[in-house]
Length: 164
Image (tube, rainbow, N blue to C red; front, side, top):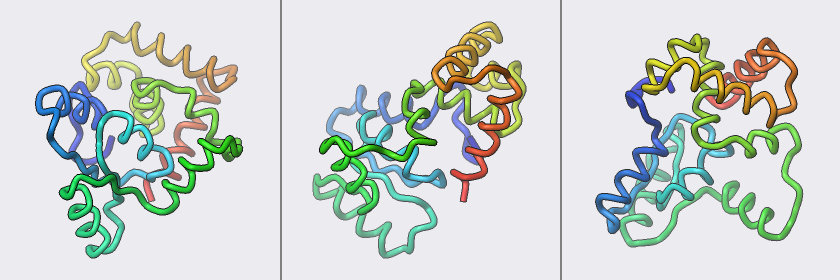
């Protein structure tokens, strides 16, 4: 997933591992990926905050201070989206389907969007090609897609949109 890749795992896996080993550890995610897609997943994995690298240094410092003080940090847009979800408000339709994907499926989807072949995805995630193919089939089902080409086009478009 871009620079600083984690061999065989994702940042979400890393958060879970950190929280399992050191339950009291406060985790703040500093990411290049659009918070609209990853912040809620990071929080569910155990992070106490999510901030994008593109934010001004003052915002990053505020996030660090807030998490260090034991409080959760998210941007106003993430907080609003979470509260709207709790209130039963509908989410934007195009990306709502992506929320159906498991963390691993989203990771595979993202790597396909980066142009990786199934064997390359398998190698990066320490999976068999057959397992990657199974993930792809589930992704196509969940996103109501009929072909691998359709999945590839949607994945590329999504990667371009999330990596501002």
